[in-house]
Image 1 (cartoon, rainbow, N blue to C red):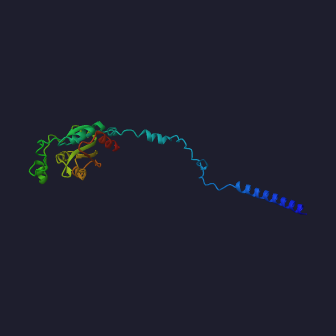
Image 2 (cartoon, rainbow, N blue to C red):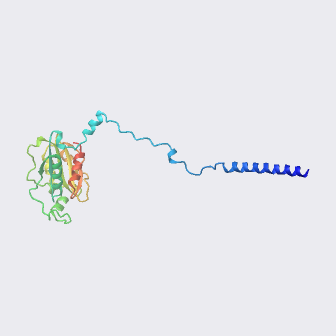
Image 3 (cartoon, rainbow, N blue to C red):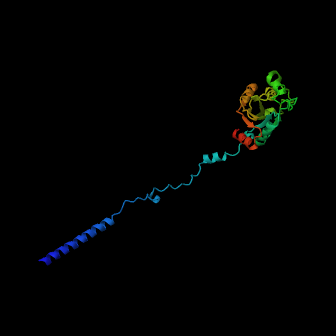
Length: 235
């Protein structure tokens, strides 16, 4: 009897160990939740860049017309009129002539301004006296007319800025000519002052012509800067 009981207990222990072993194996093989980020390869693929479409005929025509603008290509001639007291305005005028293929006309006072005349810090200098007395701003010119004036459709008017307005030697030329049918473009040079109302005042003085908004250039402006402005006019 004792032998039978011992045998049964041995069998019971064998079955118990087997069951525990199966449970432990099942627990060890259960996967843990992944803590690694989702791989980039599983994300939505980027859209493949498609080749650009063939431009339409209108687009191609538009691109063909984006070349350099030549003011002289409008059919009429271009004239650059300027007064230059110290050479800065003359330099810009030459750049404009180069960009447009236009002709140059220099406004020259009968009595040339000397360096002393141009000393605006001197209350007794010529420009100071003329500034204080408008009657003295009527400056006689060597010439105020241009040969074949009627052939010019586009006229640039250049001058230095004196006390916020166009240098008054320009006034004589403006008053002496008829700008009817012409596109007029003022430009000026200065070390700090802007264009201000100088162009508008000249337009009012002229009373004729289609005057565009002008441009101010600093002293020593580069040819590239001037040419870029001219080409941007779209004339």
